[in-house]
Length: 355
Image (cartoon, rainbow, N blue to C red; front, side):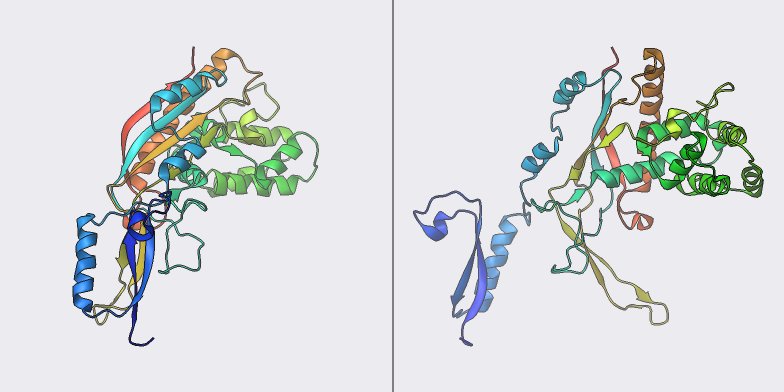
């Protein structure tokens, strides 16, 4: 056996391998066990074959997985879908082109390189999860009110409507306001956690002292009204809907790609000024196109007036588009500090059911 070589031969048409066998598959890999007399000639022949294919390899069945996930290739069909949803629903759809590689690590431990890209489980297509879009867009949205949040309380309300809230912090505040809990000390701690970690706002000494001095439910509502919420009016003594546990109005769809490539990061030794240990990353290359799709449904506003829901939907739509613009410059996925994941928005379309 030692005098024989083993290598693979790729065929697109099974008839080239199996003759009259039913042609029901797209491609095959044929294992060849034979003695190769002229290895150089065989390898050159294989390289020529790859070159003639323009070095392009198609991955999985991207059209099928997009169909299963409810992603529209033709945006005009999306308007028909929005027309069937509750009034003041809308969709944001656009194609984008990556300006830099995109990478998000997969959990697959058995792979040919140490950093495989995240792929859809069944179709093995590289993807951005809907939850990744949600997290990245929420981070970009916080930029809209981070600098001067007391003058942008309407944007905080919009943020909570779009992305929802359901953390232990908001549950503790909710329980205290609705007389299900009497633990005021815990509520003060959770309020600071909510401001710092979920809204991403700066907590200074004045705010800490103001929260420390809360002595009753009314004082707690005053802090929320003065610092965080525009919806909490002067005569309102209950938490607004935005500050209660609820699911967000936005539904984020995944994005699938049809190309893969490799990138190498080679950390250098400062003293020797030479690479130490190259790290390989499987990435979606720059200039690859993908589709972003988001659907907004104001399902939680059945008790509000038409005018109020319309105002909120228009406000949320404008804020989401501003946040998407920020996100396109910040990038999505891992290694965004290196500039990876940045993208250019193309053919942005909004489909509304406002009539």
